Length: 281
Image (cartoon, rainbow, N blue to C red; front, side, top):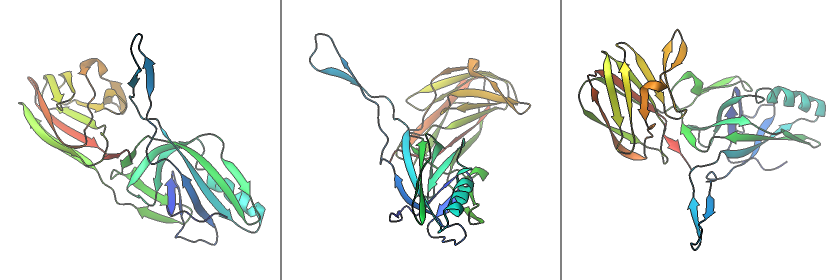
């Protein structure tokens, strides 16, 4: 068996493995984690006719690919296989938060891809789980999805949760608001605009990009999800697209301190901005 990793443990979906919680009934341990320090950035080199060298374009980060190696201990191989099946059933076909216990307030959005590999020894079965994960790590928000239930050890761990949630009520004239992203990569917020009255237009600008939302109905809430690039309202518990009333660019929150300007024509709105601090390293 390999030496246990200093990462200590991980959690995914409703399963947690913690090397400090030795449990004689389960004997499941995190052996190793294989991952890059940063994601791969795409790069395209184009040869320009009648010019020396080439022109380079790099415009996005690729998803992370993370291998998690777990060991199951038991003298009886049939017992190990039973535990293996019970352990892996919560990984198949699931997209969830992947959290490593050396950084318990950060998570990847992840899913299992490819085959889960198995190597059986005399005392240990080693399982290699291949995750396709988000290119960055996000900081946990304080909601029910951030509470990890450790079914293997029947313990519920309430991890430290952090959030950026800003609310600005009753804006009816040009207003500038300060905003701060404490991560090390731009964050993609969810912006909620509630119309206190009928509004001809609302313009939100962060000094880099801006968008205009038109023809809001009094009492209506419009959601702008900048990560998924969708604009919608909620009617009878269902999302209804409002993209035809949206023009401009989806905003991101740059690293550090910045300013958002809210203005418009014949408007009175409440604005809220929610985002996670985002880490590329």
